[in-house]
Amino acid sequence: MIMEPLTADERLTLKTGAFGAVFLVSNAEPGMLAMVRESFAASGALGEASGVVKDALTTGPLPELRRESALEIEATVLPALSRSVAILREKSPEDVEAYRSVVLSAADRVAQAHHSVTPAEASVLDRIRAALAEPA
Image (tube, rainbow, N blue to C red; front, side, top):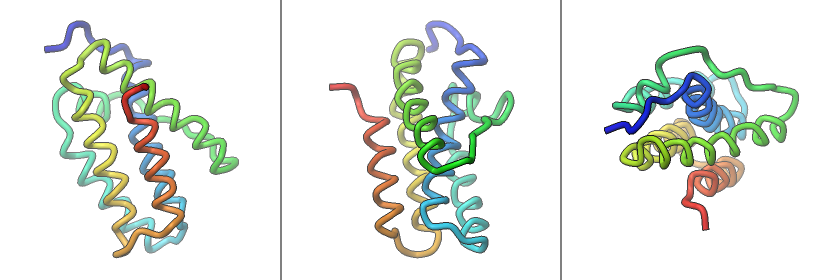
């Protein structure tokens, strides 16, 4: 049960982290055909969310990611993932694992969309996992 509802900003943080993680993996190995397959793969995983996580990922505006460079995007997305875990831990602790699972599933499906995970994709996946990990 949610102790208090997520604010619009908190929902946007969760969405920025989730959609941004997918974007980072997708852009690790660019290509138009791969991008189409990856989009379908990610939408399937994100569509499996439920409860607070589903509400956060399916309501409100889409996140705006600056696209000047992969490093700038990563500098937005990875902290958003960490903040998302902290927000959920505070407001809806039972949904922390669901959020992690949905994000990692979507990111993994994107990486697998063209049949093998490249070293660049594996590196991004590692950084996403680290951002979603419990603090030390």
